[in-house]
Figure: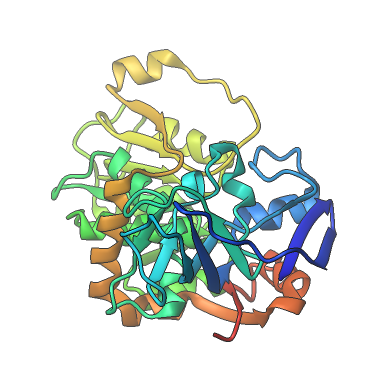
Length: 339
C-alpha cells in the first residue's frame, strides 16, 4: 500500500508498505479523504519537538473518513462498504499512536474493532469532504463544551483554523448568542463571515473595542470598560490571548485554551480571585462529542463545505502541507484518495 512516513523537519518519505490483513477481531479500512491538521503542519515545518504527538519514522495523519474493506470473522459491528470515522486515540490499539494513525496511508488496520469506540459509522447525510473534518470538529466541540456555554453568553474565539472555526460553530449550536472570531488572516476571516460570524483582524483593529461595539459593555469589570463577553476561547496558542482575557474579561468570564502552547505564561491569581474568573484547558474529545459533531454536520453541511479550500492527490502530500502552512490562501486542505 501507499504510505507516508514522517521522518522529521521537512522530511516525508512516500513509500510502499505491506497492506494490512484483518485478524478475527479486526477491521481494515481504506481512506477516502484525509485532512491536514495544524499539528501536521507544525511538525513538518519545525520538527517533532513542538508538543504535538507525532513521532518520527511512523506513518502519520489522524483526520480521515474511510470505508471498511475487510472484516474479521468475529467482528459483527461492521460490514464491507461501511463508511466510518476512525477515532485516532484508539484506532491503532495504542493511544500513543493517535498522531500516527495513518491517515496519509491507503489502509489502516483497526485491531479489536468496536462500534462507537475505534470506529463510528458516518451518517449518510454527511458528505465526504465534510466528514473528513470530523476529528478537528470533535476537538473544537469539546473545547466549546469546556467553556460551559449558556444561552445568555457572548463568545470570542481566537484562531480561525479548523478547530477554532469548529469551536465557534459548536458554541452557536450549544446556544450562545453571538460569536466573534479573531485572527490575522483575512482569507480565513472571510470564511468565518460566510459561516455567519462576527470577525476582527487583530493586526488592524482593537479586539476590546470591537467586542464592546458588537456585544455592548459588561456590567462588572475590574479594569474599566469591558465587553459583555463571558467566553474567551484560545484556538491559536498565543500568550497574548490569555493577556486579553486577564485585561478585559469581565467579572465571571471563562477562558479555555485548546491551542497548543509550549510557553509557560504567568497568571495573576488575584485577578482570577477578585474577578471570579476561570482558566482551563481542553484537549482531545469524548465519544459523546462525536455524536454532537454528527448533529452539527447534518444541520450545516452546505456551510461547512465552504471550509475546504484545497485538495491534493496522495503523491502531492508535501505540497498540500506547504499550502496548509500559508494561512493567507488556505483553511482546510484535504488529501483525496479518489475512491
